[in-house]
Every structure is written in C-alpha cells, then in structure tokens.
Image 1 (cartoon, rainbow, N blue to C red):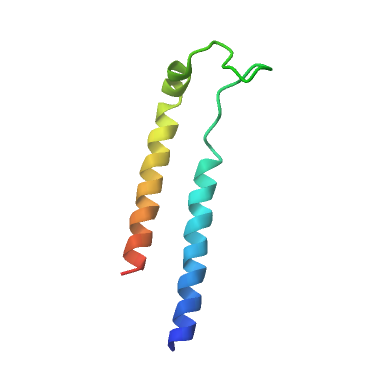
Image 2: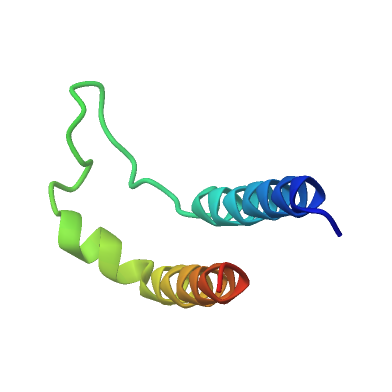
Length: 74
C-alpha cells in the first residue's frame, strides 16, 4: 500500500476507536437532580457507589480500547 492509502486507513481506524469510546460514555447515568440542580438526597458518593459495577466496566472497556489504539499506532 502506498503511504496515502495507509494514512487514510489510520484516520478511519482512529475514528472508529473514537466512536467506540464515545459510545461507552452514553451508558453512564447522571444521578437525579432537583430544580435547583442539587442531588435529590444531597449525597453524591452513595449515588456513585450504586453505579460501581458500571463504572468498573467503563474503566475496563476504556483501558482495553485505549491499549488496542496504542498498539494500532506502533
């Protein structure tokens, strides 16, 4: 392949990785807020603790995709 074709393929692959990482963020739920923008129960950490399995899955997936992206650019 000539260098121009390789650059286009690399740019496309970077876009695919970017979309994959962006889609991961869509699963993270924001705790419910009242009209003033405050948490309904006023406690952020308990709300985040309820979501720990999803946050661990997000970090693991992000790291996996990031490692694949880094290996792709070697």
